[in-house]
Length: 321
Ligand SMILES: Nc1ncnc2c1ncn2[C@@H]1O[C@H](COP(=O)(O)OP(=O)(O)OP(=O)(O)O)[C@@H](O)[C@H]1O
Ligand SMILES: [Mg+2]
Image 1 (spheres, helix red, strand yellow):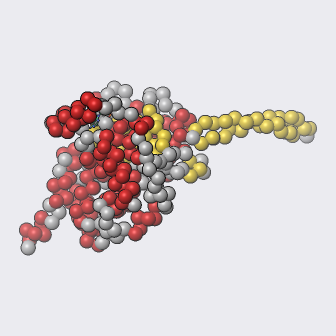
Image 2 (tube, protein in one colour):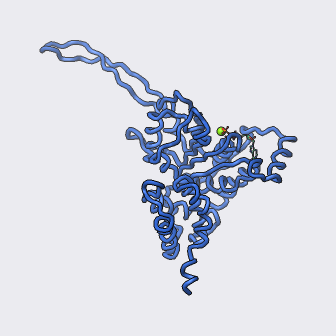
Image 3 (cartoon, protein in one colour):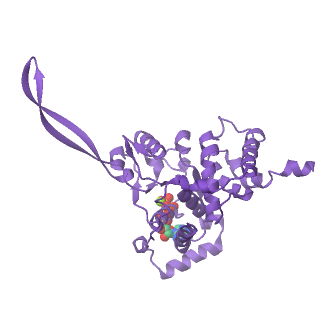
């Protein structure tokens, strides 16, 4: 399993310089089979990373670019209409009639293991709401989806006239949430130079990337039950959540600390971190991955401090000691 994971990571590292948090977030989502939302400035390799991950993992892949007129039917396949002749009884006599049936021929998101939903905030509300419910339930009109992970990308919504922020219920469908910043604007000059150097001598061709065979994604998700999460880690997670709610006054009006995300999905993301590190047990420092879950779920000033809050969880205890 570790071999598969590290091969995917190698491909991401080979083509994309920097963005280590985004790479780790995507890897965790793939292992935990959760969905990812990446928001960031244009041209910061969001789409590239999403496509690379799908190619590397060799998953049945569907890419969709949203636009203002996106209709749900474009995403889930085509409806075919069939006509049948029938006999209808009218006023005691038989009369020939026609029965018209509409049947979904599943495609797009319905048949893919990994989907990239590019510029998701451009989608009109109606299509978006059904789509996101479908991502969460992984089932539509009685058909089970083979979907493992969806990666949605967006530009910051306040800067763009054509897109609207995801509403909170929709945002919560994405367990992993990442903020993408440019190498230049972050002042990462060495990394910026590496990108420049690469493109002096190469033309990036995504079709040349070969994935590899893997059974990691064929196994049922129960494989995560083999990873242990000791009581001290569970208590630490609770202490962290307690701190956010009590010391930082987070509640339903200013944050999105849902039970589904932090009591259910967090377990999978934490176990994914252990797997990513080649361990069979979650250790306290793995809680650092919670920063990928709080991103847009807590106010920005708290999100900026998450790592610090996690590091100082023992503070009170050690002061008392
Ligand atoms: N860190 C990087 N390493 C390697 N190549 C990069 C990096 N950043 C940008 N690039 C190059 O810039 C291109 C633009 O990236 P991409 O289209 O994925 O950006 P994006 O974040 O999806 O932008 P938009 O928000 O406009 O859709 C990439 O295809 C790649 O060639
Ligand atoms: Mg893009």
